[in-house]
Each structure stands twice: as structure tokens, then as C-alpha cells.
Length: 368
Image 1 (tube, rainbow, N blue to C red):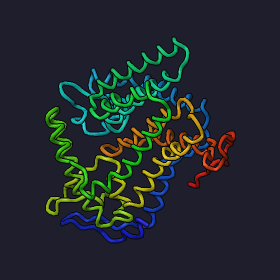
Image 2 (spheres, rainbow, N blue to C red):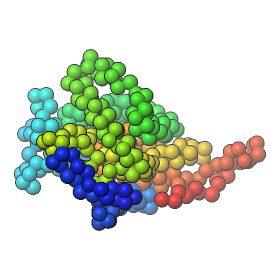
Image 3 (cartoon, rainbow, N blue to C red):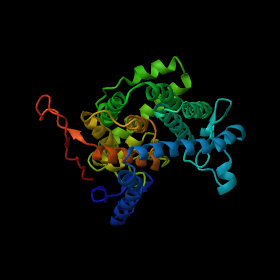
Image 4 (cartoon, rainbow, N blue to C red):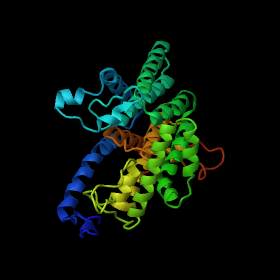
């Protein structure tokens, strides 16, 4: 539908962006299928309590292994992609922070590396909470402390704040509370574009509050909000299915042809390119496991790590508002949680007589 509604060219002075052809529908569809593959694999293969532990352990071990080249780049500057592949994958000046560097290694941006370190912190805390053996728990807490140190060196304020808020919740809060909080965060993420478009959020108050703590970060946040306003106005011109590919959703200078907008958050990228249909499809698919996990609380206490997985997914979903940290690991985690939520038994408490023993209802199946 995006291709069908964008057959006309977009003209900004000297800049002419061509209309979309049927081949764009095929290429974009194939890219979406590839991105969806980890989601479907997690849904099919990672549904039990053991699978949840294995997945979190794999995330922790991967983050621990990746922390070594990250520390190398903190010391020597981001050079590994240049040494091995012969080019730098982003803007080098964005990897400079304060008097040092933040690592990127082989990822798209330093924010992705920081979020990987955050994933390691949260996975270690979740596993430590579920571990009964004192020595293993101590080792997992040590791993969490190590990844926290790496996260500090990544110099990403958002990921550091996530760790300070959610790591204690993973260590102290129960599974029910974790899932309820994750479902609430999912609803807030889904509602953010509508609230942003309706000017219901106190943008200036947030910027002013941050300016008192970190003026540089406040300037960056104000710049993001300004870009969002322009891009939202552009997206409202074609709200249902968006503007499609080739940067048609951006605003350009009609004289120089240079783009005047920059997309940071994943939500504004999807909304501009594929409209509300695309946003609700993608973000709804990520929020669905969290809402089903909340629905499953009526069946009794969740497994020890289900709440932790829900909270980790919710953190990533929230981070898609300021950033675009959607990775195959996000999709794998969401698919695994959906697979568990679909297969978990549900007790129809209202239907059974008072004092009757609980009985499982037929498993709810979601048609994707």
C-alpha cells in the first residue's frame, strides 16, 4: 500500500525523488521478512523456562565477549572496523565524547554498543536473581558489575539511566510487578507518537530540567524535539501508509538540496516511511508479547526469568523512541517471550465456582 500510494515524484527545488515502483514493494517486503525471522524463530524454539535461561545466558556471554574490543576502542579510539573492513561505518565525531571516545566496534553506532552493554547488565542481574547457588550468584553479580563499568565507559546517558533504574528492579522486584511494569511501558511507547502529535508532552519543561544538569545533553534533546516536529508535520501529509523509501519522508532545502531533518528515533522513521499502518504493525508486534505476558498473570506466578525478559524487552521498546536500537536480538527476545505467553496456561478464575480447584483453559494462539 505504501508503494501504491507513492507513485508520484517528490520535488524540492533541484532535488527530485522518484516515485516508487512495484519492485520497491518486493525489496522492502523481503527486508521486513528477514528482520522478522529471529522473531519467528524465538517464538517457535525458545518457549520454556530452560530456553529463557539459555537465552539470557547467551546474551550475557555475548556482551562479556564484546566488552573486550569495546574497552580497546575506549583506549585507542574506534578503529577496529577501519582495520578489518577498511572504512568507518558512521560519523567519527559522534564517537568522541568529553575527553575520550565511546566504542562502536562493528555495530552501527556507539549507542548500539552501549545498549549491548546494558543488555549484559540486565541479563546478569536477572540470572543472579534466579540463581540459588551462592557461588554462581556471586559470579553473576560480578559479571553485572563488570558490564556496568563497560557501560559507564560507553558514555551513553540514556543506557546508563536505564541500568540505574531497571537493574535494581530485576534484582528486587517480583515477576508479576516486572511484567505489569513492562506492559505499562509498552502502552506508553505505543501512545507516544499520538501524544507527541497532539502536543500533550511537556517538551520545554523536560529540556529545561535537563539543562540544569547537563546543558550539552539538553541542547541535543531540544534538537531532537525540533526535528520530530518537522518530521511529524511531514508524516501527517500521508498518515496512513507514509512516504516510502529513498528519503521521501525528509524535508530538504529547495535551494541547496541538503536535507534539513535528521531521524533519530525508530518510531519517527517508521511513521514517516510507512505511516500509522507501519508503526502499529512494527511496534504492535513488539508490544504484543508484553501485553500477552500481562494477560497470563491470571494463570499464577510467571517463571523466574519471564518477568526479567519482559522488562528487558520493554526497555528496548522505550529506547526506540529516542533511538533506533532495533536489532535481531530485540526480535529474538520478543519472539521468545511471545512463544512462552502463547503456551502458558490460563485459569478462568471468574468462570469456575468458588473453592473449585484451578484448571487450565485452552492455550490462546495469536495469528501473526
